[in-house]
Length: 412
Ligand code: SIN
Ligand code: CO
Image (cartoon, rainbow, N blue to C red; front, side, top):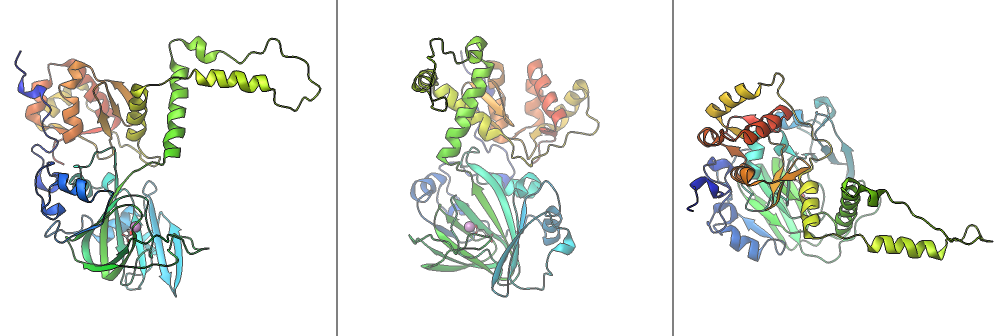
C-alpha cells in the first residue's frame, strides 16, 4: 500500500523560520564556515578547535544587557558573578538583584547566566540552529556579559562548546596543553600554567568551537556578550549509577512483583562466636541474586530516554492560568497550531517516546505525528487539522497543554 505523505517524518527543519533552522546534514552553511554539518562532525566535533568568522552575520544579542540582568534576578535561573578586582578571583552564585551587580563602568567582572534558552524565545531559536547535533547531547545556551578586561580566567571544560560572540569584542587565546593542573585555593577553576598557542579577537557573529579539554581564556575588549552553546556528556560513573537506579525502579514495578519483594533468607545459618564478622555465605548468596539481574538494550534505551528528557531540577513549567477545555483547545489549535514549550524535552525511539522524564509506548497511531512534533517542535495549524480525527492525539495534546508542556501557536 502506498505511504500517505504524512506517514513519513519530514526533515527536522521543515518550514522553520530561518533564525531557528538547523542546517541539513549535507547543506553547506555559514554557521560552520561554509562546511556541511557532516564535514564539521567528521573533522572537528570532539577533535579540534575551529574558528568561524561571521558564522551568523549581522547577529545582535538575543537579550539586551538589562534583560539578562533581570533573568539573573530570578530564583529558577542559574547565574554566577565572577570578579577579578585587584587581581583576586571571586565567585558568587545568583540570584542577583540589579543593585547587587557591580557598575557597568567597573572593569573586570562578568555575569554568566545559564539556560537562557529555557526563558527566552530568541535564545531558544538561536540554540535550535545547532540541532544538527542530537537533542540528547545539546545542553543549554549560556550568555555571559563582561565589562572591559572581564572573563573567567584561563581554564578548560569537559564539554564541547560553541562560543558565539553576540555583542562587542572578546580576545580568545587557546592551547592544547597537556598540563591541566589548576591554581589551588581559588573559588573557580583557573589553570596554573596557561600556554596559549593561538589568539583571535572575535567580533559579533564570529564563533569559536572548542572540543573538551582545550585550554582557553576569553577576555572582553570593552563591554561584550558571548553566547555559549553547551553540550551534555554525563560521566560513565553517573550513567552507571543512574542506570542501576532505573533497573531497581523497574524491578519494583515489574508484574512479577513477588520477585522484587523476595527477601534474603538464610535457613541453615550456623551459630557464630564472632558476631561482627560478615558471613561468607551472605556474600555468596547476594552475589547470586545480583548475577540474576538481567537487562537488554531495550532497558538501556528506556533508561536513556527517561534520564535525558528529565528537566533540570530548577525547571518549573508554567501551565495556562485558565486552561481551555478539550473542545475549545481543539478549535483554537486548528487555527493556530501548537508548539512545544521551550522547557519541554521530547525524545523518541522506534518503541517509545519520552517527554519531560516520562516514558510511554509509541503506538502506530502516535507514530503518525509524535516524531514530527519532537523533531520540528511544532505542528502547524494545517497539519493539526489533518490529525484531529484521532482522539488519542487530541486528548494527549490537551493534557500536555494543561501541564504547560505545549503552547498555542506554531511560531518559534
Ligand atoms: C564566557 O563566556 O565568558 C566563558 C565561556 C567559557 O569560557 O567557557
Ligand atoms: Co570555558
